[in-house]
Amino acid sequence: MDKLYICLTMLLTVLLNSCVQKPSISVPDKSKDSIYRYDHIYHISISEPQRALALADTAEMLHLLRPDQTCLHAVKAMIYQNGLGQLKLAKFHCQKAYEDTEFKKDTTGYLNNLTQLSGLCYKSSDYAATIRYASQGLQMARTHGLKNLEAKFLMYIAMSQIYTGITKDAKANMNRSIALYEEIVDKDHSWSDVNDLIYTLGETMDALCVMGDYRQAATLIPNILKANSQHEQLESQAPPGAIDMYKAFVHAQCMEVYQQIGDKVQAAECYRKCLSTDYAKSPEGVALLTHYQLLTGDYQQALHNIQTAKRIYQQKRNTESEYYADRLLVDEMEALTLLGRYKEAAGVGRQIIALKDTLFKRKQQDDAQELAVIYETGEKEAQLVKQAAQLRENRMILFFAVCIIGLLGMLLWRIVRHSRIIRKKNEAMAVTITGLLEYKEELYHSKDENLLLQEQLQAAEEALRQQSAARTLPPDVPEELPAGAEPSAGIPPADEAPEGDVADSDIDPGLRLLFKQVEHEIISKQLFLRPDLSREELMKQLRIPKNKFAPLFKQNTGLKYPQYINKLKLEYAAKLLKEQPDYSMDAIAQSCGILSGTTFYRLFYENYGMTPLDFRRSIKVSDNKHDTSSDDD
Image (tube, rainbow, N blue to C red):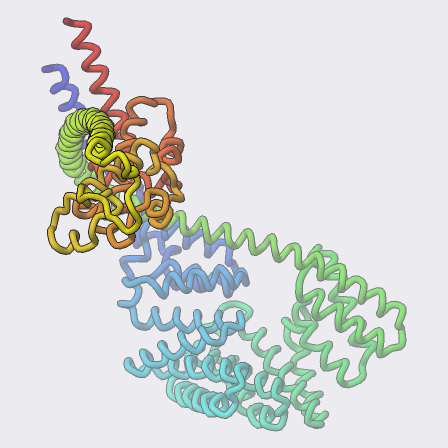
């Protein structure tokens, strides 16, 4: 016993030691490791997205940004969207940041994340979610007086309203958004505000072009050109390559609008300025020029630019992309068709179909990979939460373990004790029931013998009565009674008992005699075992008057007819359970005339207070004890 106490003490010591241990992780000095700052990660998110993501992962592992109220999910969402172009992962991290209760304390950061989430929902065509998130952000922005975010949320609401058919409200929200941005830019010339203004103007012009309202879109060209000029003056604040890319997009959008309204001079000027950017000379920027060249009829130049871009893509082995299929190949097929080179155009069409199939399969693989990353992120979060809660849980686990073990021990003791009591009670009840059934069977045999003797006695009395009557009659009088004469008064037969007896007395001797005869017939012929035995059939077979059937059983047994029959069935079942240990419960139920096993279990339990299985088990235990005691004697 002392060794057991020593072992338990050592085990508790080990567990307590494990509860207070902390993982040792060397955390770098944040003042020296400036590369983990949020502004540095944001600055390289476009030019070096993989490195930015690695820094964010390291910062998450070492808990470097959380003290500054910076949510790592918001940082990753920005990297996945701006640098890697993986919008599903960006949306996933945005939603995680949206659900972060600690991040809500940083109002500006939380609203910026809500803005990004609204934009991602808009890009994924989830316009209802866009309006929901943007409306929530709009209320918060107005509450805190953040006009730039208010303008951005208005823009997302307007864009979503356009695609949901609410054009009147959409135009009003667009105009309010643009007016707010222009007011902000006039007061504070920051790159982010000008960038947001250009984006809002560009999206508004695109939406108007989709609606076919090119004239209304042209009225916004001076606004977007002015914003672009202000944008170029803030190059020091912008990420590398952003100014040149926005300039190409702005002039490409303006030249197409000018071309659609017939102002070819202004369209050509915008085309020249777009062509002067480095982005327009890149493979990605070719799409900004080719559409305009096709509109102006410069099919050969458009085809040349497209094929040049195709060669660059082929050299980089980057031909399996949506841009390559939807912009380059589609524009190439259109240019070849307009040049009359139909055979080559058909060949390009076949390439588009084949590439679309490849892209569809790759998209499925990419979706699976993104889901895997999302799952891995969830697992990582769960691991971090688990590590944070492990110390607290380990300190409480021993206390709860001891309490639970004690409670389980008490519960087990009570269960065992209760089971023993129930088992002993069932054994005693089974012995009592068996004894009562044996006594009842003996009583029935005694009644049967008495009834037989009574019948013999009545027969003898009847014979004596007839002999006595024969001796008293004159010789010339025949033995038969004359017509109309009535027999002498005597005990009437059971089935001829006067009907008024039942009403005159609670216990009618005639009714009692009739019950003895009926009971004898039911038990001796085992009529109660027939499941199809009805009241009418029993009355007909035993010649029971209809007006005496109900009181016949109620007055003599205190039970109604169905209850009386069921009691006989269950007594017979108890007898079978003892005498036929190999019978199944269904077989015993069928033998008793009970067709449903569920009904048999219910009736047996209601009558005897235990299930048939418990009764059989108790009988076996009682018999074993009796055999053991007999052997001992």
